[in-house]
Amino acid sequence: MTGNHRRDHRRTKSSSGAKRREGSKVHFAVDTLGHLLAPCVTAADGQDRAQVLVLAKRAQEETGETVEIALVDQGYTGENAADAAEEHGIKL
Picture 1 (spheres, one colour):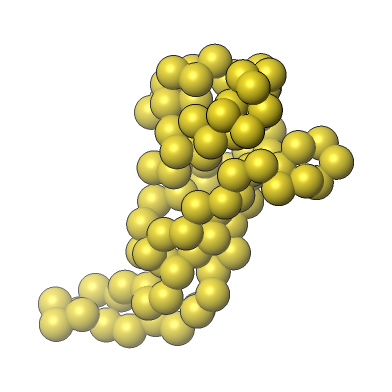
Picture 2 (tube, rainbow, N blue to C red):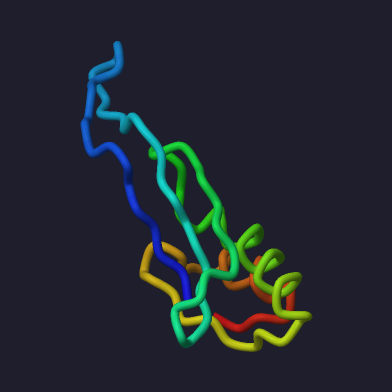
């Protein structure tokens, strides 16, 4: 149901030497036919799972609260992500 697309794959090093990503990611929820339900754009260095709450809310608003189960990429898994989806009645 969700996916993301990085617009810019360049990596740079911060002053501490740690790698960081520049650019943005596009996260989205689609239905089983591939129709777009909920787009969300974030900074490329953000965590995918942090967008589950926003995507779940938007998907439920778009469908009239009919989404019950979401199939997600590994980046959108974890206890916090599952709890965020459950807030909107969606099981990951």
